[in-house]
Image 1 (cartoon, rainbow, N blue to C red):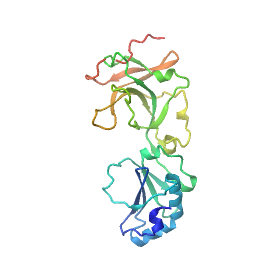
Image 2 (image 1 turned 135 degrees about the horizontal axis):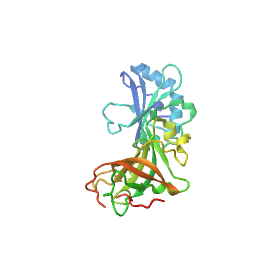
Image 3 (image 1 turned 135 degrees about the vertical axis):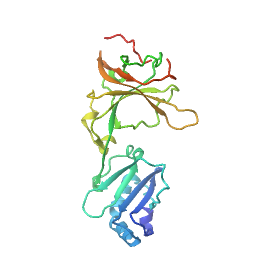
Image 4 (image 1 turned 90 degrees about the vertical axis):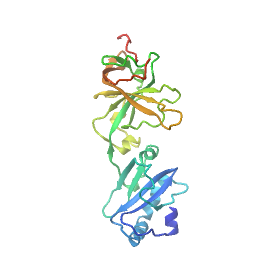
Length: 268
């Protein structure tokens, strides 16, 4: 049970009552919207929803619970990638919001919470591989880049939220890594993208029914966190022996990246 509920504290009056707590250093928000507009209504909401909040804490922080406090707008602007969830049922019900980085690392929520999630734009990561020794100068329309992962059995394709590139690009290699991605035509539900439920798009080999995009993931510099993500080219999937290649149809100008994808690979 949360520390706030244990203390029985009623929050100060404010329209759209909202609470925040921290789970493993990441914020979690609960709100009741305009249905709860004063301290009395907030106290009633906390009493009526205490069992639901306890189940939420069992999912997010089963050992220590969560310390809920009134949310103050503007204090948590760094966390701008909130994913909302509503609760199934009629009448007043709390609404949950968490950053995507939290959701993608959690186990599936218990059904008792009745959480209803949105769908998000999605993509397939088809390969992540080092830059070729000859560099990127030859990355022009008509060139060919072999997708190294496609030659493995099974092909290790990753289904993920669009742009969910994490902070691991280029790790262990100052030059960075190449990623070939394919944006999916339709958004997918959060439970699929978080890995809580299956989906045909997780199958291998993948259905390559859209344009492919080549990106460079590289370290931005010694004093900055994260990795830079640079679009390099667009193309189409091309069967190549036991695997696939990316045939470039449009390429960006990359004057600072000299030594090109393997454009001279012999046709099988």
